[in-house]
Length: 145
Image 1: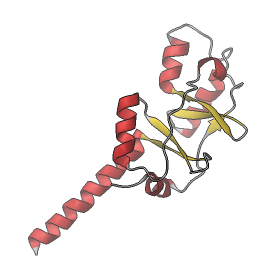
Image 2: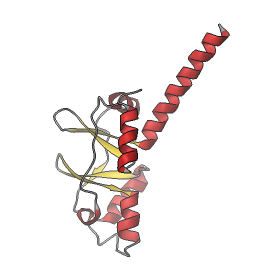
Image 3: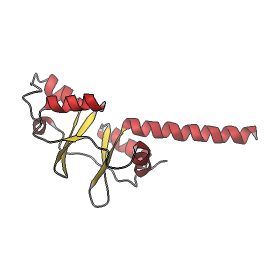
């Protein structure tokens, strides 16, 4: 199983995280997610992570409640209790966390608690598929002799 550190390296390294401030409007956040083709944004105050906004938050807390995305601030609807992982954790551990917590994105914190990346369920699936292809190729070579 790959570690979170290996997954981040494959994505282009640490520090590639899209974020926005808590006083931005939901409209601005959704526009940024569309522009970057991502499903979640970290909400940051300086270097401190204060929450996460996902497409699910938008659908349930804005659309279904008939709120205005231009008038609603992120701090009003963001998920503030963010579940995080460490670089040493495996993709299997991350999938278990995502399944149990019903989340699709996990911020990655180093041992000092500093944000170094973000992984998604798509990143984990991509890694698992890559591992399975490698195993299949090795088995094929073994059988073919």
